Figure 1 (cartoon, rainbow, N blue to C red):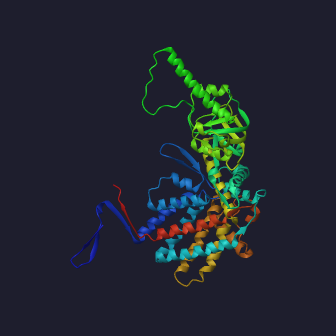
Figure 2 (cartoon, rainbow, N blue to C red):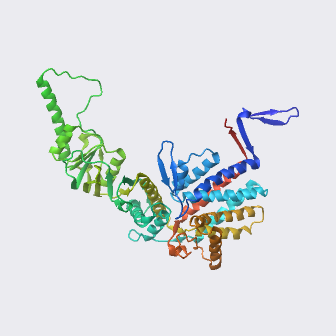
Figure 3 (tube, rainbow, N blue to C red):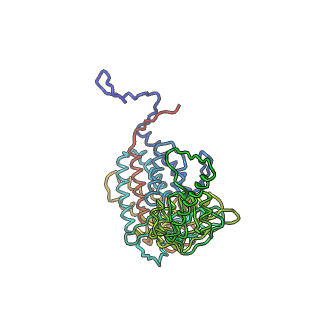
Length: 535
């Protein structure tokens, strides 16, 4: 943009290629931005809570995704609007940091925008609204600390962790066997958790899926699952106390890097060459046998001759195993990855109690289970399901549950779900608004109203009367001074979330508040949108 001056010396802006740009200013811009944000929140509102609906998204190349996970829905939706993109990033950052609550955070931001719109119409300056929101979020944040509860868990007593994971899974498609999946998730996290440092490395948990079977067949394997089978059909299918050589070098004679040509003009020379090759293979196989390996896992292939030799020397082998899987196998079995045959030593072998090959159904698919490893820090969750979409969705749900278990190990404080924490914060923020003299108190009250959006959406999705239900629960909270009353989505007959065992992690909820407030403040501060107009 260039600055120019008229004859009175007043500056005016010349926008480059002005006719090709559209420009929104002032209130118009804010209203357009707010309506974009609200539109995104409206899409996600129906998929909140245990009775939430799923969304079906078709990608440009025809892949269909059916999901309930806020972050996934927004990732797959191609949004053009810049403000809508902010909302997508908002749910993504919640996903990266916490892993759960990706829908709630967007619904929250949408409600804050909706309230801000009413205040803007009354003529309150956007910056004052943003400041009021900031104060209110601080009040709500501190109030959450007050109503949070600690609970203790140990390696043997992990029931509280399972309960919290079940809350996460109850809003997903897999809720009919949530108990099963929650236990699997918690056991997996506890298997790889470092409880002294309170840290969990989720990379050590591999989630594999295979179509077929039913969801109840999902299992946790203390070890590694490889989607490969033995290289020769006659090799043993089960090896106990296996000593595993993990190789990243090919099982074949070395090839010179330069171009080369071998002239063979007599039969003797050919025989010689063949014997040489044969001897080379023999030495390789012998080297593996000498260090005491009973199973070879190789990143590269080997040709039929090597395969045949391995078979005869009864040294079972697996070929074409990917790099990541090799690393996981090495971690689990305590072995070393060997890049050259010369470096094979008995110390570098991995140990596993049982390696078995398992076939599934009538298909020819076989998988290799490596179990009872020396170091069981790497585990695999193996998911079965009726179709591909189901398995993908279960993977996402398991990921959410794993993240929740990890957060609880990091910080074992919880608040109660079912909208109870939001209603409680809303009451606290409303009460605190009277302490602020300026215009900000309107914004603080608006924040309190916006907090009601989550329980309202929960009630609406459960087919209850939203406003009646919400006001009933709210009055009950004030009357009994009980911050654990929430929306009874599953029609259990009690509003007390302690009895229903509906938990949320404290850090997850606090993160939702802070992220939603930050994004809304950012959107409110925009008062001029200059964009290239569409032809």
